[in-house]
Image 1 (spheres, one colour):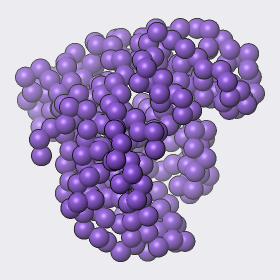
Image 2 (tube, helix red, strand yellow; image 1 turned 90 degrees about the horizontal axis):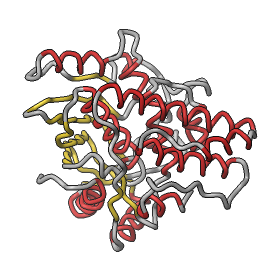
Image 3 (cartoon, rainbow, N blue to C red; image 1 turned 135 degrees about the horizontal axis):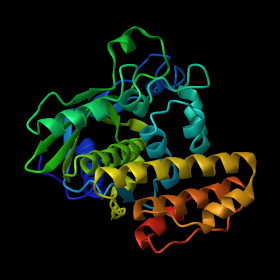
Length: 331
């Protein structure tokens, strides 16, 4: 498949491909799988097997459609939680209460991508791979695993949808490949793609390289039959690309930006959960150090006000473009 310039183009184009070429498959029956509504639903679906999409610019990592606007606070919250290597269920549940239905113990999410990539028992896989590439740019031993052999022998409500990621530095540009065992295309792809394209940008900066193409491979790429009508309506309207400010280049600055994002997310979530409006006000009044985290600050602070019951306050910033403003209007 030829590469798309933006995620929005890829999202619309590949949803169209599922409608026109996808094979019909009966429902999964496993009561531990969301694909069966955890045993409570019949959910037949349409799929493309061995599916690949390519995106030239990982900065254009969001798509806006008024029928199904992406939850931007969840995007930033998921990125902060993952880049911090955590697996607590409380963080994603702050943005989406449904996170608890995937937790076996109501405290953790066993399949958390960031935990498995950045805080595995054996160490930080991405750091190890980046160090290997730094020493030997032509290296191919650069696959970081998410799905583990033990997952096949564990009875869990969460079996990681991502199998792993691979990085290649070629001609000074970093290509990032995400390998998914399964990808729900309509409502989950926007969040998985956002997370891994942000990680792509972080890894490139740690290598002092530019971003090459982002590649997303899925064993099964699918939508459920009860989503088909919505997909058709979504595709009847424009799907608008949304580009975020670039993460800073260079290892020191990108590490500082990641730390700032993690601290912003934790601070605002903690304040909102405690009902501490004064703390949220302080975040609203304090500009972030980097353009990327400044957009995250405006978005996450606006969401914190919503959690406090304030439906009117929108935190503004020169870093927030009109396209991002459209997404924030759905908070």
